[in-house]
Image (cartoon, rainbow, N blue to C red):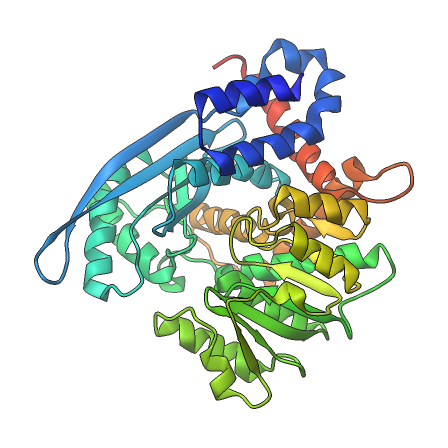
Length: 445
């Protein structure tokens, strides 16, 4: 495999899709040696097949706003690779949504899902619809119109969407309500459902908790723990909330949280009251963090800045793709940061990752350390199939076990001769091997 030749071919076919091309390049660089040592992969053209989606579905979503005016958005569902199970991946409602972003997310999802060891393929979807500032009635009408176009393309054994940015419990409820009406069946076709109608306990916290559990395993390789560590978290959604909560519970001091408006510095560390206040702000349809500085004494707001300028032991980027760049990474390294655990999908640029790996700090890629969310979605699918609910303690224990197993797989494939664990390489190879072997078994389809 010649990585540059493949990338040149993809760039010619998919010009301008920078996020998708970035994600593919990272995986190819990690698996190229393994691939070239296994002629069966080359003969079956596994790389050429896995980098292209099985299908891309694009549709128009027409809906009425509260003024009775017609609005039109674009909807997408990308069914990327179903070799090891039904397509599985979230729906994102955000104005930034485009084909490149969804293809990158779907491609990452293939290997992330494989790492969980659960039988789930990779997919992604969403719309350029912006829920911010919309009434509940408008969001309901949009979700119903979106599902009207999507429902025949999904199913519990075909494609199981979940939530993502802009799609929480409210949106999943509206989407599922319309699906149930159209399909005339009550199945596990969506995850992130309400606890009273098929949802799993622990799902909102799962990605953030899983990120911290993975970081805990990384620290343990050095005989260390979260206790007494200074932590910065970016983001203001479920992932950041769960990460801040679990890190605090394990004895860390979370000194920063961020939103699109900037970040707040909390010198004495987040309290449970502050973590609860995050939920209040989000419930008010407001994801800015500035009000925290007004609500709590000693908290300062830094407009338009990122928390990576602070001196911290651990950084947990939990917001969005490419939020942490090269200069940010160098600042973290210069300030003595020992661990960066990605809670979002591809939040670090390639330049940032190179800096972390060059300085041999503990660094985990999102496809490994943020797999807790989809893992718990997989557990929700299992509960739906069995018509049974596990307790929060049971789900948390299963999540913890899955994250430990993912860490072990990364160590197996990513340990270098000098003992340093390249978790990027380890995660990519572990996920790729499972998917590639399944594709070989299934033949050319």
